[in-house]
Length: 167
Image 1: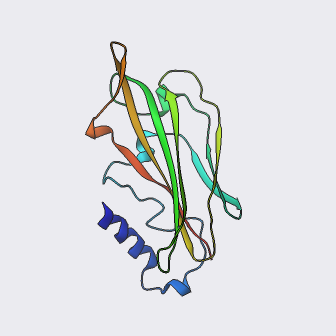
Image 2: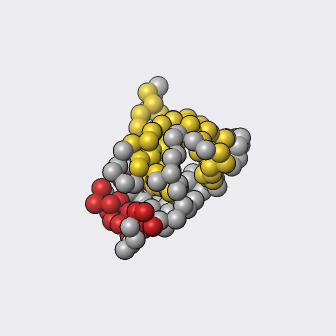
C-alpha cells in the first residue's frame, strides 16, 4: 500500500521538479487514491463529500445530508457505522510534517436522515505543502447486548477524498 501511494505521488510529480509545481486543489493520481486496490471508498459511502480550503490554514469537509440505509453499502447485520476522517500535511520538499488531525463520526445505520455536517480542520498549509484528506468506514453489529466490529474484507472502505498542493 505504501509503495502504491508513493507511486501515486511520483505519477503526480511526473518529470517536474518540486520548485516547478503549480498550486492545485486536486492533485492528480493522489486525489482519487484508494488504499486498498479495487475497494473504492466512494462505492461504499455514496454521499457527496466536498473538501475545500476557503481560508489559509483551514480545510473544511462538508458531508451532504443522507439516509444511512440507502447511502452506505454495508455487510448484513450492520447496526452502526463509524466514519473516520483524517487530514495530514507535509512540506513536499524534505517531508517536514505541517500537521494532522483525525475525527470519528458515529452513524446509526437506519432510515433516518443524517443532517449536513461541516467539519473544520485547522491545519498549517504553507506554500510548498501537500495536504491529504482521507476517509475510512468501520461497520458494527450487535450480538446479544455487545456491539462488535465487523471484519469483512469485502467491505473495507478507505480512500483519499482530496489532495491539494499549496504554492
